[in-house]
Length: 83
Image 1: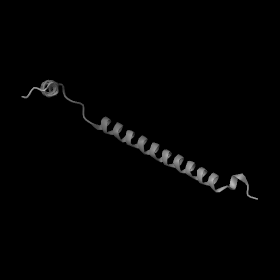
Image 2: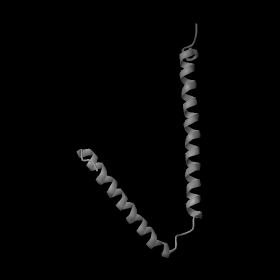
Image 3: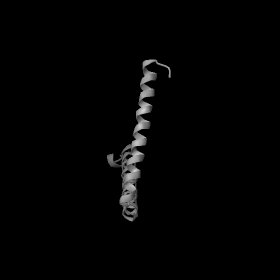
Image 4: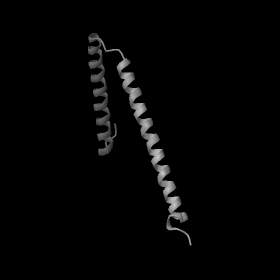
């Protein structure tokens, strides 16, 4: 007579659970390593000089105008108006 713990379905289920735990632990460790790498990259990046602030504001305004134009075109398409 076979013990309930030696049943093939119990062994398969236990093996699968252990495999999932090992894979999850490896993925978590990899994710933490990737986050640490990104933190180091941010720490190593040079601070932006104050003179660069004006050009970034100009770039943001251009991008905002571009997005507004895209929205206007999408709204026209949605209402059936041809441009």
